[in-house]
Length: 340
Image (cartoon, rainbow, N blue to C red; front, side, top):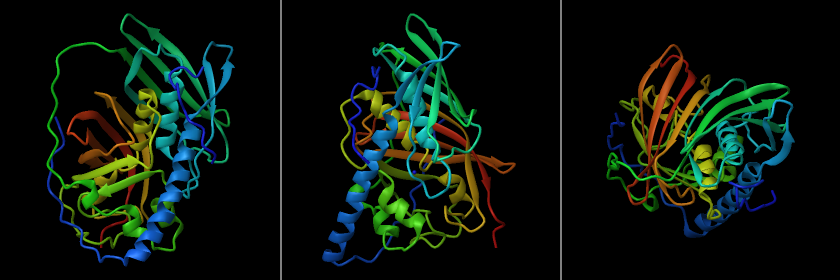
């Protein structure tokens, strides 16, 4: 926020953002020998983190409650923040809903509210209410529950594959991910629990086009990052089973990683800004086309508004070929210290 159990058959078990080009990041090269050691450590830790992600998405069926809701139980990823990563609960909720739907129907949208912080020491129960199964669409409500109270409430919609009108906003032209620094390059050498978590334990490779905002003094960072727009390449740190339902659940997990960064960036803040507090309030995700979460995805992000200690982040998600595969929106509590 490890043992590897492949999650096969997840289905069955049981107005667009504006864009500007950020400044390029300049960083001194590391000696090849040190780079190899760092990359090996980074890669091994990320592989273990990916196994952990697959494990928490492999929910355990727990029967049916007295009201007819399908029940599932899920474990938690480790997190240095003292609370469950919201993206984990989103991904697990998508898995829980998916397992109650005809495999011919894929999730195409979800809308969720984060109600309470998650306790990483306690498994989560997912209660799925079958709202409707129509001729083409199915709807499910999911409550993620800990200590007898919901921490997330979500509704997801599923649809059979159908032909129809088709259009999409084009992807911007940006540098390839191979040309950009990884998290390990940026903070992997820092002796800090958050830096180790970002660089080694998170099962995802994140590469910013321009400066990253992990630290207030990040290389290439400006005091004023304009309108906050950014582009980020992201993929999970290893191959996934060829299961589209799993890839869509993993995208739900990944969609919460950088979605509020434009809000921080616009106000000159970073994840490690002293006195800053950020928490997800609600989250919406629309899957437009098939997703490959283990291939590079480009998140083109912006923030149209922040007020009342709340900031709104939006993202268009493209695959490497420039196909628009998803759109994300999240409002988060954003309490930042006054700028000097």
